[in-house]
Length: 466
Image (cartoon, rainbow, N blue to C red; front, side, top):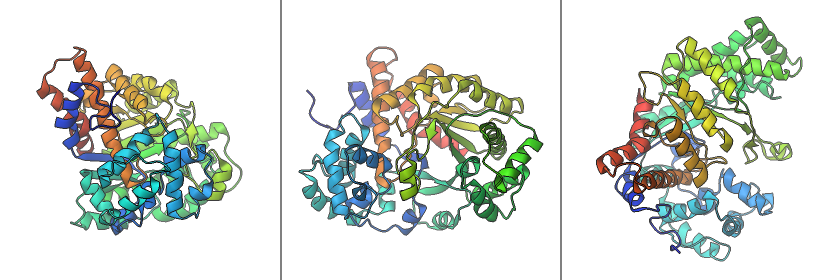
């Protein structure tokens, strides 16, 4: 039996240990998709306590606490932070096999030098020991400690961008903080808030009165101009399903006009036609601008409508769907390909069943000019465990080229979640190390070291720079 969480945890062969220690562990991080707060980074204030560091906005940890029957007041409510931490500590020992268990240990050890095992019994000691150290830990110090070279933060097109501009000018911030254009609200025409959003948020930000499909395009394009002016080169979209249902312009104008004027919700057909048209427009714009398109499918947001009404969106109530259809995805890319307008794309599904299908489709549309132009992305939501990451690596290796992969983004909602890069890199090195130990790839350490450096850092550096 191996000792609990040694330095070589998850590194099961000598080759894996060498790959991680000599190559992966020392590399900087390019994190191109997070839910972090630009205001928090700009303010750079030390955290009040351990709960603010570990549990604020940590919806994946909230799910575990709810599964343990913890009352909501200890999760998102107004209970004292010390009591919230206690409830999480009491939950954690039951999370055997969940990546949050190991990642919590890594968080405490990496950031605070704490090697105690967190539980209900040790919570008081850890709280007291660590809270004395957290005063020296601010957002930018965390970014520096994790060697984060660049950080992408999802931003709605209607939002102001001054904080990003300020950080760009601030020479004391050593990490390049960039907005990621995230037009999800504009895509969700079926949402009851879509009308108000388009009229009073997106339309106002773009300076356009939206009443037709052309106006939707113009508003999105205007905001892309604003994002691009401060260095944005990435867009992100999270959707329930892959739709491909082309429509004529007059049909699209009717769909937009009826919905934005409060004349009823669109039918399922109309929703798919609208979403198809907007995604095709956006993809062509990204290709023209040289942006990267990120697509994530098979997620139903805020499925617990009662909790969403009480607490607001994004409180840990997303769930899987089976909406990632290969035929629709192939038709979408084929339409773009006929016009030579496929942008660099990272596509993933939160449903573990979809990885091979997505990899097979994007393999059809690779082409000359950019190695790994279309990437099979990974998802930390529902696939961020060892098996999910191994499956993503295996599908990339089987259908594409693992040597062209660009790592996984953290999808972090709290800064401590940046330790997911360490988790991923350990699994990557173990995956490749096993292949070497099995005699399926030569033990050429120059070639292997370059492979690890490329996957963990160099490929993303080149992919997002071009």
